[in-house]
Image: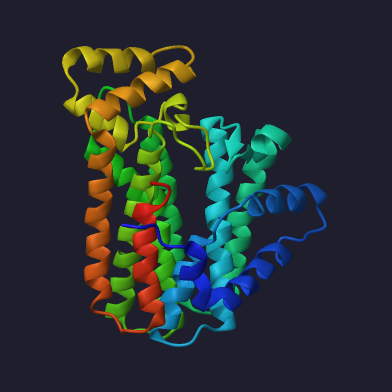
Length: 326
């Protein structure tokens, strides 16, 4: 399958995305220079605004994309950005989207506090929209996201399973994508059934999105993915590719993998060694197949939604998620 063009996919909501982008930057202008500088730095760091787009697409498919939809999309991007700031501190990450992470420039304290600010100001803007259904949706999701961080923290190499990984991905990534589409449905006055279905669509696209992202981290001769190859391994994250390798590899390769994970420093040579083993055991194709399973579920639900340019765009976005950078 040829890779869809993301700009073309987003074209039906280009005007609204520009408005969201303006809100994202304007709403972060404060009288505290450090807060404004750190927040705008990471928000300008090359994100595609996929989550805001999902909210706008859901709203457009069921009704009209209003100013409130754009503000809600801004809120979703703030929540996502807050998690990136916090994740980089937890992971001691030096890079974010091929640029220095905020923590590597301003320190952990500033990154954590700016992330906290983005969380709190998001709920301030959310309250102004005056719809308790939106508050409930986002409150539930941010609780799930925090739970996912803790689940990831306590996960160990010896006990890591695919089921554990999928639970963490749902909490940390997919729940916010589900909430974005659910909130778009609520703002467009969709029915409860439509709102619930859009949550599932967003969740399943989110599951696929993260699985593909984690699989591509181990592709040999990996380029252009916005992070160093093997970054997850160097941070000792037990993502699906590593769980799969530990499950299917022979005992000698399993031992070698665990020995690398126990090294004081995981080097580029270690990354190449693990990536080569994954290539032998067809780990990346397995992961991409699992991602396709989630996209299939999303498309089945999309087939029950109104047929228009916005649902067509969601289908195209789903295809983009599983074909990007392959």
